[in-house]
Length: 472
Image (cartoon, rainbow, N blue to C red; front, side):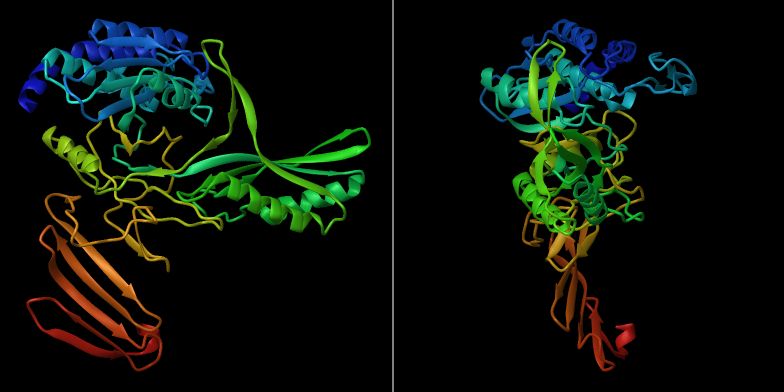
C-alpha cells in the first residue's frame, strides 16, 4: 500500500507545491481569510472531495466518505497568519512564496499554510488511489486561530461538524512543532481583576498590592505561568475603578471557575490591606467578527489537553514516519503543564520528522495555540516531583511495565522506575517490550552518615557500599 501511495504522490508533487505557493501569496490576516478560504475550497473540489462546504464561521470543510463505519479522522490547520511586522526586515516580500534551496519562504509557510497544503493533498492522494476508507476523513481549514482562542475551530467542533453528523474520534493538527510529534498542550485564560471604591487612594493602593503580590515575577522561568498587566483607572459617578488584565496558563486538571475563585480570594486578601475596596474577578469576553460577518461572543479561555503517548494513535504516527523514511528521534522542545504556583514543568517525549508537514496529535482534542517551552535535546525523561511518576507532562499517567508499550526510539524503550519512601529509594531499569530488567538498586537511611546503597545488573552480582549522607 505504501508503494502505491508513494507512486501516486510523485504525480501530485507539482500541484502540491503550486498550491502551497498560492496560499502564501494570498494574504489572510486573522478575520480576513476569505480569499485564502476560496482558494482552499477550489482546490478541494479539483481533487474531487466527496463534499466541500464553507460554514457560517468561514471554515472550509472537505470530506472523504468511508465505505464502512469506523472512527472519523480530522485533519485541521488554520488559514490565518499574524501581521508581517516590519516588511523591510524581510529578505523579500512576506507574500513571495518563493522556493530557495528546497525550502518554501513566506508569511505562514510554517504556521501553518505548509501543513494545510500537505493535509489537503494527503486527502487528495487517498482519493486518487481509490483506497477504501473505514470511517470518514475530514479536512478543515479554520479561521481566527492567531487571536489566541481558536474561534473557528470551536465553531467547527461545536456546531458545523455536529450539523453534518460527523464526530471526529481523532485529530491531527498541522501546527509547526519544530519537526516533532507532540501530544499535549497547556491551556490559557485571560481574566480581569476589577477594584472599586469611592476612595481613590484605597483603589490605587489596592491595585499596587494586587499587581505586586499576585504577579509571576520569576525572571528565570522559561515560560511565565501568569502575566499581569498594568492597572487601568477610570472614574464614573464618584467611583474610582481599577482594572488589571491577567493572562494565566491552565493545567490539565484545572477548571477555569476554580482558578477564578482562587484568584478572587487572593485579590480580596491583598486589597483589604488598603481599605474598603470591592473586588471582582471574571474571565474576559470579547465579540469576534468572523470573515462571513457572523459576530460571536467568546470567552478568552482555551483548555489544556493531552493524549496518552503510548496510545495506538501515537504508535501509528511513529510507524508512518518510519515508513516514509523519516528519522524517529527525540526532537527539540518541551511540553509544560502548569500548576497554581509556577513553575511546574515536566519533560516530554517528542519525535522528529524531516522538513515536511509535522503535526500535533490529539484524541478528541481542540486546536492549541502553540507549543511553548525551553529548547534543548530531549529523550525519554521521568521526573518524580513528589506526586508519583510524571511522564511527558501527563500528571495522571502511571507507568505499568505490563502494558503493551511501543518503542519510542527504534525498537527498544528503556524505562527507569523509582519507588521513593520517607528515607529510602528503590529503582529498576526496564527494557520494553519484554520487561527485561537491566539494572536495579536501592538506598536505605537516606541522609544519615550510615546511609547504605546497593545496585545490581542482572545477570550479575550486587555492589554495596556505605555513603555519607551528603553523598547519598
